[in-house]
Image 1: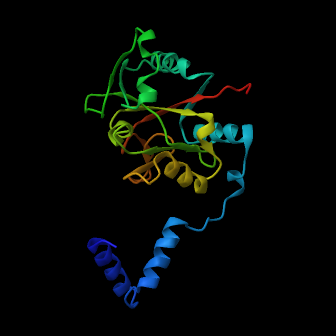
Image 2: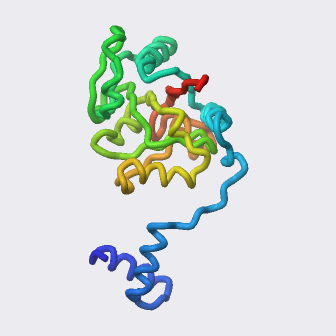
Image 3: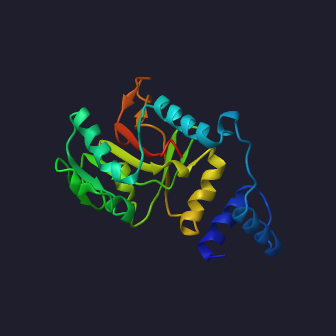
Length: 226
């Protein structure tokens, strides 16, 4: 155990009026952290197959996001261009420096001006991949890293998330396993995003886009005949 971690846990145990953490207790703690017990899963998180995908789309829409299905990755740039045109949004698009996202045929969409990297203050539209998605609440999950800068899902007014239907899990509990499996360990930051940013903290008035994007659009790669 590192000195900093030992100091923090020692302070917590002292505040809880517990004794020192023994070597056996430390091993038990590490075991619980590496293999935590599963929590109860609500009924709406117990869906499988095509019902899981349908539940995700329904819950995402309920949270204020928009979802479009495309049959293949090659159709993603066209779907992005169509969404921006439909809503009269800027066509300068900041892409995540993710090989999958950057490797899509963006050059076929002459109307789009794309660049890749962390979001800049002037970027109005971003496109990112996702680590997973949750049918239970229509949530997309992004893991921070060099290929997935967190600024892309916080700074631009419009965040477009691209995900494959196979990455949709039924409930929150399964998400952690999916995120861990991506890189073998948890990233520094995991962002759970359910619809556009909103708050009603100010006089109970609902405001959109306060802490992040005011629009969330999801491009779901789903061969519905498969």
